[in-house]
Length: 110
Image (cartoon, rainbow, N blue to C red; front, side, top):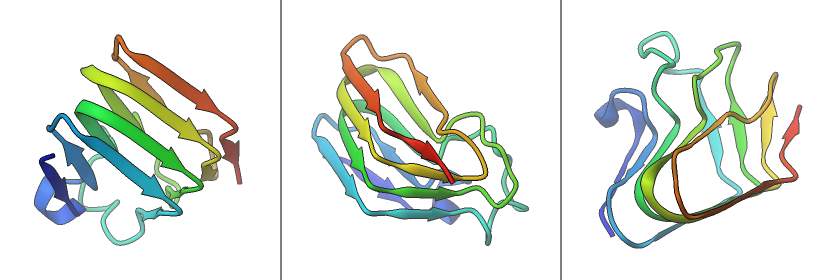
């Protein structure tokens, strides 16, 4: 798996996965406070180009910004489970271009 991280090195995206493996994210807090003024929200918080994503019980703090997508799933993503996450001040935004099995359930607004 090739996993890159943190927003400053990725121009605004927190996580980019270009590998074939599985990315597990549990109880994460994605906070836009320190960098939302420095980066455009046209970039997703999590960008999956390949592999599998399992994200649960995580929180997105937009701090008044509205990203085009919190999570981007590219065409080569095999599968994704996005369950039980929350977004401060809005709905979870997912761009799904995957041809695989994607389950998005139980996500809430705060």
